[in-house]
Image 1 (spheres, rainbow, N blue to C red):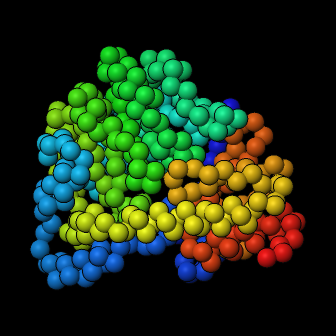
Image 2: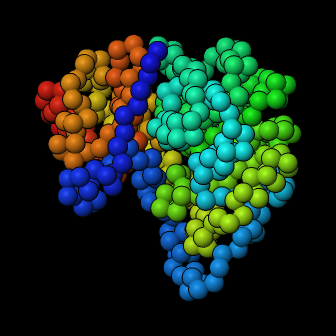
Length: 357
């Protein structure tokens, strides 16, 4: 299975076409379609007057809030500029030759690993079984890699791994002294159990969390990591000159304290998913697959030449990937209703389906 993803950066596309960003519908972004919490926006406004002072290098208030939320001690957590930045620091520390990753591999992972000269060993999730994770086979594959990187939920196809799936992997990685990274960047959508407490008891393993995707704070690009004391100490020393800016911290604290924001987000996403699924129910060329995350997978049952270019002509950016078995998938994040409706109209037009709506 030779799966490949194809995505584009909105800024590159806008510059190449001479377009303003607000004229492009970007379906490659997972940003919360509701945007930031009103409480987060108010917190940013209130803290603008503090821009003349340096940020708290320890992000004490945010760290304590997250520690209470995650049930871990402060020494086991680092608030960082971005989960991928933290992963990059870890790769520089460990210098793995080979990284085992469930595939399809996200573009973000692929670019980072290739930049650092790391060989990717993909573990293919079977598309014919709903991209199911075969835990026993994965445990066997751990021995052939220096570092194991598991997105949970999977950041391309949305597969969620249960504790029963992950605990054998954690145990195997610890027994073989392999570095293990569990990326829980999308965990807030399905609200699956975190493996943070298990990870803190395992040397050389860590959990990555994002505060940007679910909370609509992609412009700040920051998150945190949880791991064992020794590993956190080494990473913290390398990140000490890159503190989270004070507006980002204020927005994060307000977002985490806004209990209604999560409920509103999940209700909106589920409502829009139903709208998209109902709108495509009669289109034979498309199989609409739900995921526990904020996106759907659209499997095209017939080959469509130049699919991405056809969308780009309408100023719509989409991410797609192939499963290596001849099937093409569009990874469709839920966006604003008008965008979702516009995407459906264009897709039907590309497929030659008359829209009776």
